[in-house]
Each structure stands twice: as C-alpha cells, then as structure tokens.
Length: 254
Image (cartoon, rainbow, N blue to C red; front, side):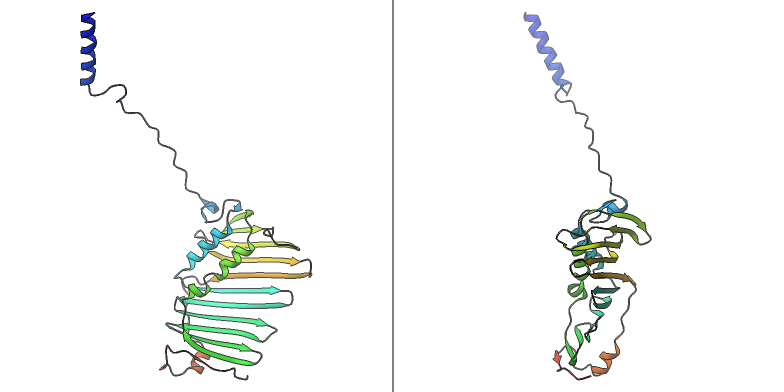
C-alpha cells in the first residue's frame, strides 16, 4: 500500500510538471460561419432579391444618397383633371432653383437661392408677389419630398426585380394597406445600389370617382447640375447692395 501511494503521488507530480492536464489542454474551436454579404438587389437598403422589405428603409437611404450632391429633379402629378409639374435644380446646398406650376389655376412658384439669400416669386390669379429673405439649405427644404412619395405609395411585399443600367428596376402591382376603392395600381421604380430612387412612377384609378391618378419623379444630371441666376431675379433685384435683408412686395397686377 505504501509503495502504491508513493507511485500515485509520483505520477501526480510528473503530470503536474508536464504543464498540461487533460483539463488544461486547449480546445479546438470551430469558427462560426460568417454570413455572406448580400449581393444584387438584396444589397440595396430596404429591398431583397424579390421583394420590398421596407419602404421606410429605402426612403431613408434615398435621402442620404442625395445629401450634398448636385442633381436635377423633375416631379409631375395628375389627379383627375388637375395636374402640376415641379423642377428643382440643385448645384449645392446653398445654390438651387425651384420651379412649380399648377395648370388650370394660374398658380406658379419660383425660388432661387444664392448663398445666404433666397429670392421668391409667387404667381396667383391676383398677380405676382416677390419676396427676398434668408435661404434654407436644399436638403432641409426638399430632401424629404420624394422620400415621402416612396413611403406613401410603395408597399412592402413581393415585387418583380430586374437588373437595370442604373441599378435595379422593380414593379409592384398591389396598393399599400389603407388604400381603398382603387384598382389598376402599379408602381415602377429604378433604384441605384446606394438606395437612391432614380425614377418612380405610381398610377391607379379611384373607383369611387372614376378618376385616374399618376405621380412620378425622376433624377437626372447627378453630380453635374449647375444653376444660373434666373432672368426674373436679375430684373427684379438688379442692385445686390441689400443682400441678406428680407423684403416683401404686395401683389403686382400682371
């Protein structure tokens, strides 16, 4: 018994001197698989390869892609017998020209921004009104406009998604939840990999009024848009010595 005890103790000491016991041996760890980066349409924020996952996510990415970028935006709408058109040319956050027309009512708006100064001209049935005041950056004033259309008219769910020279083209033939008394609902959009919605068209028919509606926008001249001082600004404010002050004139006839 005494020799057996000594032998066991010696074996324990030798094992301890080896530096490792069974419990001390390093385990072989198999790394967890790294998910593959999404490719194709699934790499676009808010989209998958065959659906719209979130119009809100896409709209946020769209707005980020426009920030501090020059572009020309054309927006048109038709609802029944009424229609309008807007054109916005942005050279920089503090230099842009906005034009909006509503046919049939004699309404039009113009805004030109140059640095800290904003020039406005409003045409109404009573005449024209001119205003000169402080400017607002283009992104703060207009950055939400087209994103709001995407949020309002693009439903989440299955979509036909195909490759396009500018990214991906998607088609949805289903109205968002909450749209009632409509049929022939179709959305067509071209989306860049960054999430920028290059073009967007939604059309449908209101079955209660038997009236069609169409809303569309398109971005062109991305990164190359320049803006010249409009003739109406040069004519109304030939003297720039009052730059930065705000003035308003009453409606002028004609």
